Length: 148
Image 1 (cartoon, one colour):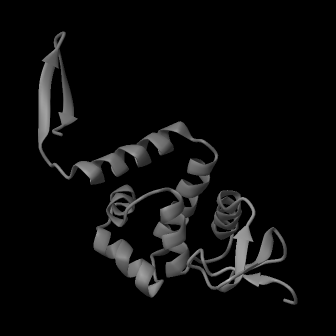
Image 2: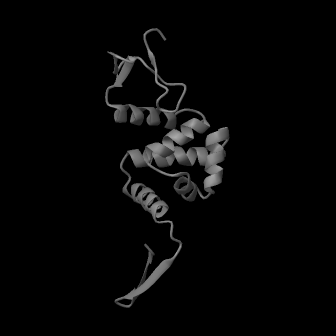
Image 3: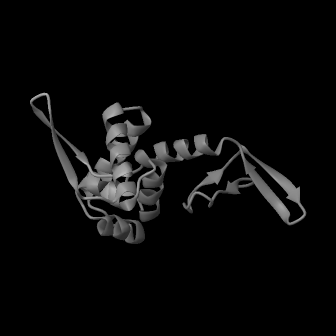
């Protein structure tokens, strides 16, 4: 592509920008300023959700766009964090995981509140790191929560 910028900062090797960036001269050489980088990343993620098969780098990109750890994504998909790490490294994930990841991303991006709440809960759990569950009786019903 003539006059296109090869945008590798996303961690993907197959992204070229036809416009939406400014080349600036600095004392260290040329620099690139991306216009609305967050919007660009959302557009890239939407394109990934609609392509035939995800590569490992694309799995990582979608996971990071949702703000998830490998552990959180693994829990959401019913696999270990090591499985997610292997998919990201080798790029070979089961077809069902590939499709489910795309669906989860699209629903997350479209504002599906239960998906967003689940992702937030999983991300919060990653921060806590506790497996201890506290059960309390309140007005005749049991409630549970994770220990802080």
